[in-house]
Length: 227
View 1 (cartoon, rainbow, N blue to C red):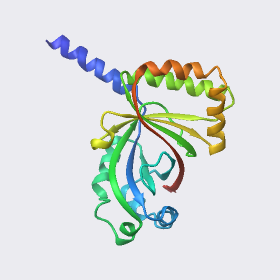
View 2 (view 1 turned 90 degrees about the vertical axis):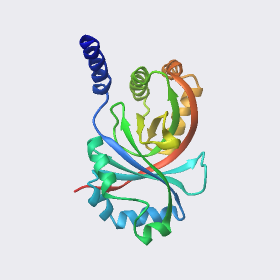
View 3 (view 1 turned 45 degrees about the horizontal axis):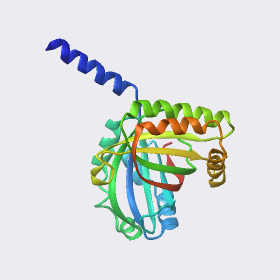
């Protein structure tokens, strides 16, 4: 029994150690005035300073919206520990009247990156997916990112697992493909449908996908960076 427990612990540690450091807290909102909300956060960074955010930003859904003003605010932290601590320091449901006038909170969740991810926001295609083997899928996405870059596409790929995702996110993973602009993101998609060789890596990765729950296009930007 002792040996069995040791094997289980070793297997668990291998899975955990395969993921990079860091975590993101996200706040999904319905903005009454998207630009006004973004500008207000840029001009009033006190909340980000209070919770110890390293970098904060927003993603605004441009295609595939479920409702008008669909967007989310994200905060990057060096660890899940720091992300959870930040959640204790700020309650988005109990905040200033200025925030309440600008947006309605839908839900919040923490996300763990499962592969190395360069935080350089832009035009971002997001898939919410159910996977049968996230480790193998991450390997394929790492291979795909390199193949895309070798083909001349400056695309960053991230795979994320929700923690405390509630009914909206539990059981799903996020795949995020980031281009520098909508045009560059579109050019990569055109290349795939034209039969680009890197497309075979994408096609092969689908054996690890049980379901695509939904897919959207977002415009993302940084609104705060710690000094």
